[in-house]
Amino acid sequence: MTAHVPDGRAPAIGDYGFLSDCSSAALVSTGGSVDWWCLPRFDSPSVFGRLLDPGAGYWQLAPDGEHSTERDYIEDSLVLRTVFRTESGVVAVTDALALQPGARGHDIGLRSPHVLLRAVEGLEGTVDLRTTVAPRFEYGLTIPRWRRHPGAWSVHVGPVGLRLISDVELTAEVGDLSGTFPVRAGERVGFCLAYAPPYEDDDGLVIEPEDGLQDTVAGWQSWAADHRGYQGRHLAAVRRSALVLQGLTYQKTGAVAAAATTSLPEQVGGELNWDYRFAWLRDVSLTLQALWVAACPHEADRFFDWLAAAVGNVGDAPLQIMYGVEGERDLTERTLDHLAGYRGSRPVRVGNDAWKQRQLDVPGEILFAAHLLRNQLAPFDEPTRDLLLTLADQAARDWCLPGAGMWEARDESRHYTSGKVMCWVALDRAIALADDLGDGARPEEWARAREEIRDAVLEQAWSNRAGAYAGAFGSDHLDASVLLMPLVGFLPADDPRMLATIEAVRDRLTDGRLVRRWAEDTAGFVICSFWLVECLALAGKVEEADDWFTHLLDYGNDLGLFAEETDPASGEQLGNFPQAFSHVGLVNAAWRLTERASGQDLHDVQ
Image 1 (spheres, one colour):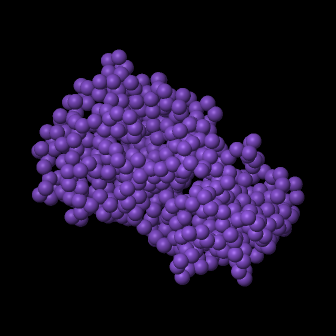
Image 2 (spheres, one colour):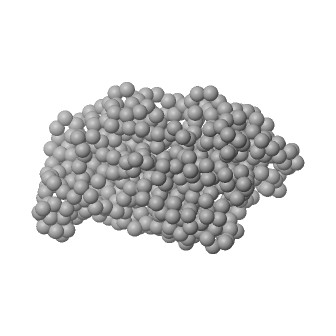
Image 3 (cartoon, rainbow, N blue to C red):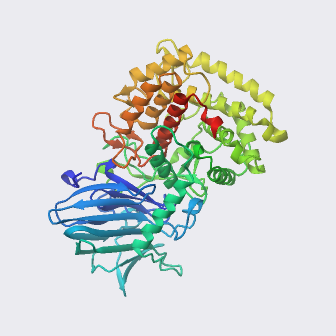
């Protein structure tokens, strides 16, 4: 892999590696540049933001000259090791967002120190390296002034400060620290960049890079060791995806950010650029389902505690579809007009006005997860029980209303088929949980509403013209969201009309092995592609489904990371990165393949 940026453009989205401390995230290019880091949370303003504008800050650490690279995560971790080869020698750079020293298992990320560690190890010959640390605070608005201290440098702007410790001789100029230094075989050079809030009595945690990297690897590996339940097909890809999903989890609350970034485009140069650094209830619920195979209760407990606290007393109001990672409700969207956007894709947005939408599928996702995880959650505490009862009642009452749909359309509301199906799921799972929901359960009333929904979907979602279930009632337009119908048990995959729908999606919405959400969609949507794998497996076409899955893995980057979408023509990843939804799809598809190939129900063997 040759590290260069064509024509001075930002690297391809898939060029980046993902670092996390379960509180914030950083992206590192193959060229050794940290081009994205937000502090102290996923949704905080960036200190390194070159991903979205050349002048928005970065930290480069790489050979000072031509080089090639190869990289991988250290086993069962999110610690990244990149090997740089030059004419004069070979060095390895290891990068990580440090975990709290000594944190293990489910304690990783609870008290993240917000420290970025980078260490260089000489492997062969001598390599001259150059580093430039160029933070630009609040999404690139402010160029800081560095201050020299004995053995350290510091900088602060407003509420954010950084402290850099290294033995490398650096020079400060116009907001940048830079320097060149040789590394010979056997030598090690380290850097510790720590978050140091300027108005607190805290200079940032000083972590010796080598020790901190080893401890962070041990922390991640201890978490992975607690999540060894899955032993099925495509094991390596499932384990990598599980680590990515944990890396997108804000560990203090259990909320899962939909992605680590904002405003990476669905189409380069386009305007469909959204902030995904928040917790969609759908995504968190689906992530719990993906991690369920580990039979580990901690994730479920934390999520439902966080959800009940964030939602409060719902009453008759529709459930908000998304929250901040600590439960914030108001996620009002604004544009950052000073940023050029990824490869000119504007506007750059922070916040997301989808929080105001009505999406009928969310109660179903939550009740689906509660039912799947009932053995870990039971007995339900009072806030969780009250929430589940309210969601079931809302599904029975509101299923006939239009909504924005799971693709979050910003034009008119419609009667989306997937929303109706997920209302059916909400009631179906609530009925199954009735004995655990106490005196407030109304299974007979819920059953009547469930049958009304089923009848409406079977009659109004079917399109004779399309020869398939359409994306909305009364429509003839095919939409990949209808693939959820067999996945949630609404219809068997081999039902004649359902099978015709699956085949219609495969034949009309695919490009290569990628599934578009609808015919005019600009790219393949990764989770829809994995949904098709599940549907094929449920229809008894296990080997075809497995072949499809294997080809889909090729669309991930060299680290096994997926964005939200992929351009079928170029294979370039598009949209925010890495994307929880995509990795959830991968994990669930692998489970389904294993389940159908073995003839066992994974729900029963856990």
